[in-house]
Length: 519
Image 1: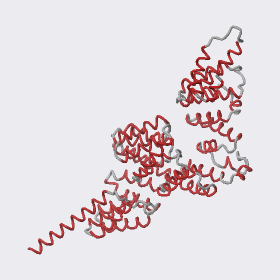
Image 2 (image 1 turned 90 degrees about the vertical axis):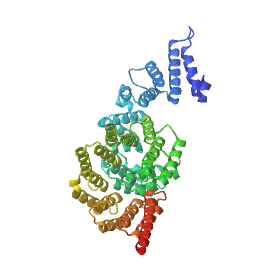
Image 3 (image 1 turned 135 degrees about the horizontal axis):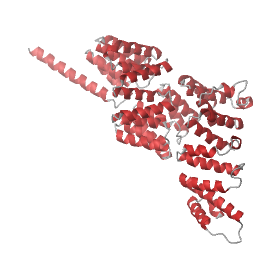
Image 4 (image 1 turned 30 degrees about the vertical axis):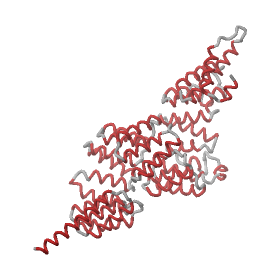
């Protein structure tokens, strides 16, 4: 039996442990030795089932072992605390959070402090059940024991605690010698503080400082890419994500956000490569399924996208990207009520995620809930008054009401003041000018936006400019704009259609001129 246990053959261990527990002991055997053997067999069978992802069966065996351990109602030994952690972990993985918390609360906080793993699990469970005070108590206990427990530090910051509590010169929970020994720790903490306060540009700057101190760290590059993506610095975010992937080809964290970014940029080839890489890395996490979901959204296969979104959420029910993906797929099927529910849940978990807010507002508009959509967009603008994207979102709401065209125009101008060259704002405002027959003003706006834009993908701006030139019969300028659009993106159908239309217009003009000469 011991040889099999040391061999690590989980299935053999499970079967032999089951047989061992069913054997009748000899009459001479003592009751205590029988109990100890049963405990050992139960724990080993539980470990084998845990390794096979059979958490319910593992929990039953751990519970039996815990019940049989000596001092079940008194002070727990270190081995007993390990058993408590395993049992609570089984319930947590089976999504029975209430049972997991119940197991942990059977022992005192003083005893929990003897196991950092138990403290960490308890903090996580309290956090996801919105028990902020209990979560903070456990995270602080971990930091007191292990000042470099980055997961606990991030947990504290995610619950709204200011960085001064951790690194303050007076009363800071992380000792000054630790901060001096690891100079990257202070900007890392401040960067996460800004990130959880939805100040993504400030977070990006601080992560850049941290990255200069520890260059080529894949995890740091990934979170840097994430905050740049949230700050609408799409090209910079893509570069950061690419560097993270090249540094660690098996990286999973934040790769679902990278997939979302590639979907927004319509980079099909890169998204296909990412999905294939993530699938080869692991299929037990939501990231590969989210990448596949966005790839199918890009190909307008929303039934498959919905399936992959559900698959991702079955692996992690709190995955924000999975909720947004599922909301997008449900929106495409006009299941507005269900889509709104998923967008709201995504915003509850990540209040600053613009794509979730945009999905919610557009879903409300399509469901003819215009007042609620306007109120939601206005609230977002009040929370983030310096966000050009949220102003554009509010302008899209105004666009549904013809009487608010002037208000829409002012909102778009404010967005362009905050972010010169912003493509969505420029496209909407130029369309308004064009509808008012002020084509020259629209052309001038688009030309200025192309010069000022920090976005590497200028295709939509060049296509819109080409359409305006063609509308004003400036065919050579229109052809040049369409060609620029194709240089930015070779598979741009609108640019190809524009060039084809120009060729037809020129043939028509030539035919008309010949007829005039003949007349």
